[in-house]
Length: 403
Image (cartoon, rainbow, N blue to C red; front, side, top):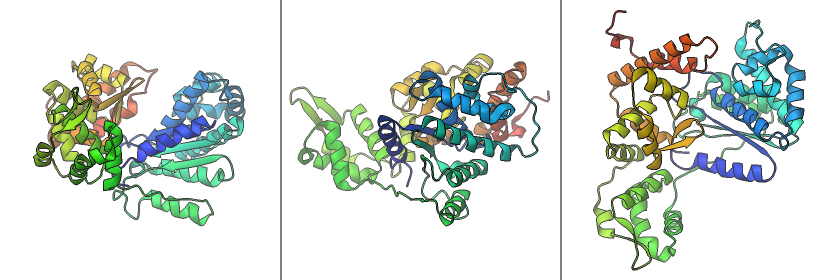
């Protein structure tokens, strides 16, 4: 479906049902600015699962999973640990985790190992396993090959794959369509669920629930909101927040309910699309917060705190206070050690605020800083893909220092 229609929210509501009924739900997200790292979303999902195994060892049958992984992989575990670092907490550092690269086709080997990894999880836990990957329009070919392989080899087991993608951003030759065609021809049950904008009545139900008022009372406001947002859930949510901040929607203590100024809301000029609306919302923030969001946007939808630490320490960029404010305003979310944009459209709005040349210069500067930090620490190359991706997106002509 289109951007902002709630594809990700629907998947995570489904996750609540899966977990409540004893299943395992894993999720990863592809990123337009992080396509240099193959298998990124799949590896992220499995990395989180390994962390879950350590934290919830008894309920997830971690002993059986670890035993199965050690027996199956042996020395090959090293290759999986290179993309799933937390796996080392399950299989340990012995058994050849630091072996040598001896396979000509590294991607083919990783595809095979990742599929066997899922197979062991499914067999050992004896629980339904659901893998959700978001934003498939930005998935790399290697990832799609793994998904296809999983669906063809695990079709008879307790495995379900759920993927989401933006409508209109995948042409007929996209590798996702090729995968869908192949698995359907080979008998895998595949279904497309179409997400769309909310209709006028659902918008009214949503606002009624939001304001704790009867649908009859909220109908005039809902009609205006529907007209301005065309029923896009993300646009609608940000519009309601904006109306509240600007005092056009407020809680009346005397009437003990929410009230609004219909005439002013109706006459208020609002951009036709959510991207422009979000850009205008970002422009209302202080320059420090705007700069912090623009900096973060250069790294995609989510950024590890380790990257921010490097920028602050090595480049003298002050970010964390501004980012925490952006979290409080709903532009970002803080999950463990990651700052995540609340929606891809927020990240895109911040990124598009940068001019092309300025954007390229920032990518290059950040990439070099991360590369130098990686070079200083031989035992940790966790920032390497991020550094290379930034340099690739940079503009070499922006280098003015001949050294």
